[in-house]
Length: 387
Image (tube, rainbow, N blue to C red; front, side):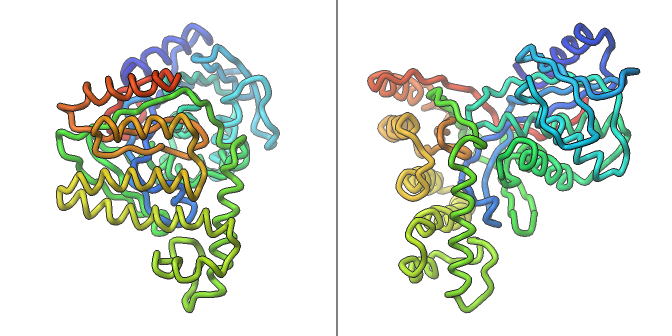
């Protein structure tokens, strides 16, 4: 279902459930992370893309006090108020929505109450395509529209991130929210999470990405994600005592400096830091490869990234490893896991003329390993908007 169809279906579900047409409608896309794994919360850089799968969100005013949420895709309902930060029960998506509304209310210093809301998403849950950020951003855009308030896009991203931290329990960086907000058609988003500068990188017309889902569900809050972040912070703190310049995050450590000092810090923290320091370097080398039109070199960086996920960060899984091996065997220029890992999807970079053949070979390779992959067609797309 494309953006227009999702918004239309969300509005129809809202009317059927609440008996009132929505006054505010918004759309926000999911994303693929192309290069730069776990670098965002280390003040690093990332190449990502918004995709043409996302969340619709509708709101109408209600005479009833409280916030009343209907998750149309899950056929779940919940009601809550924003007087405190208590968790929402009985509906999986409720905490994301409450968190966004709660922190927007706090930021504006203005009470939010008496709203009927409907959400509907077509990003596969647990696929690593950031369904949670798409929901958060669509909810934020819709509620800001009905409040007739405009916020800076980066501020919206921060508030959505804060909601995920405190209401969903995942200490995510800003990558997912930035990707959902700043996406461009047929291009990559280069995000610098130290300066918060965002720029776009146009892809060659014959390049596309296959998203391959081996159906390994994941939840960042329930995964070792938070532990990995703590290890990165530990490595940065220890390296700060060894290097002759300030180190506030792994972004401040060059590959050469890390190689020279790796044996002088905690071995477990060093292993995680090796992935992040390498990823930040790969993003910058990847940018140069795209500028020079060297897609073979860019694709090789994707394979290197995945190997580092296996060896250093240990956020891959056997099913994703099979998909990436299948892509390499099929002649794809590059492939890697996308997103936090511990399940989710892999992305495969292909030229359009080889996409069908690569897909067929990956499917056969995976099925021989008792994995039934799902191929999700995505297109790099524009970011969030109100309708």
